[in-house]
Image 1 (cartoon, one colour):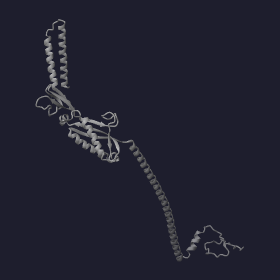
Image 2 (cartoon, rainbow, N blue to C red; image 1 turned 45 degrees about the vertical axis):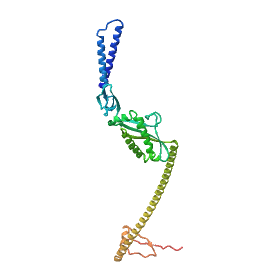
Image 3 (cartoon, rainbow, N blue to C red; image 1 turned 90 degrees about the horizontal axis):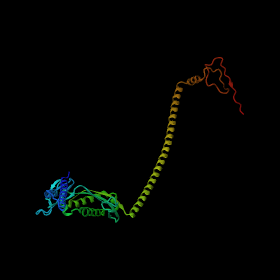
Length: 351
């Protein structure tokens, strides 16, 4: 509860009571009636109201987010106390000293091209000329606070004008000076962060010299002139078309490489199959040659082997075998029984 406000309310009520008592006394006197003890009541009410008014004039309650600057009429204080009032209940000399309260919490000043966003109605964006002569509009916000230890200096130097006469002009001037060091494409791409940091450091130093603390600088938006925006859009379209063309060429190249590799793979497969077939035939021929060499070697050592193999292949129940009449027997048939009859076939007559 604010005790100073409560006492001030009591003082106001006391003055109302005192004035009411005086009015009632005048009314009674005008009607010729007596007002016993009325003078005493009036004096007590007036004295009580004066005392409460004096006390309320000397009490100031400072909120935690505030500091108080004491303007003094007391000789020897040079019109102002050197130290600000701290949070809590404070006492000053009634009617000889006055307190001006300053907020030390963070404040935000926004400069924007959108009327509803800026601290000033209408288009309050910062018009900037870049190093390459292009005109751009910068939207920004400055978050700052009054240094609690320099509240008295801020009051002496700026009073309540520090936003309009310090924060605003310094911010706009530093933004213009810093942005003029970069080209238009740099401040929206590679150099945007660097430019914002340069503005922040320069502005922080300027505000610190005047008793303010810069908490943050926010580069909200950068917009181009309609002509430059149209040229940027055309450039982007051209770059996109060029990138698309490069993509199509690369796609065609990859397709050609893929077809070439596929054809090469087919050719390699044919070669491998042909090589495999040739190697198989070589292996088969070598195997047949080795088999024939083995057979020849066996025939040299066992001449009757052919006869044995021949007889072995004959069906066991054969009774008659026809052979040409002009061909000799390949071999005797010792295994045939007496009932076996060999009938030679007549030789074919020439036409």
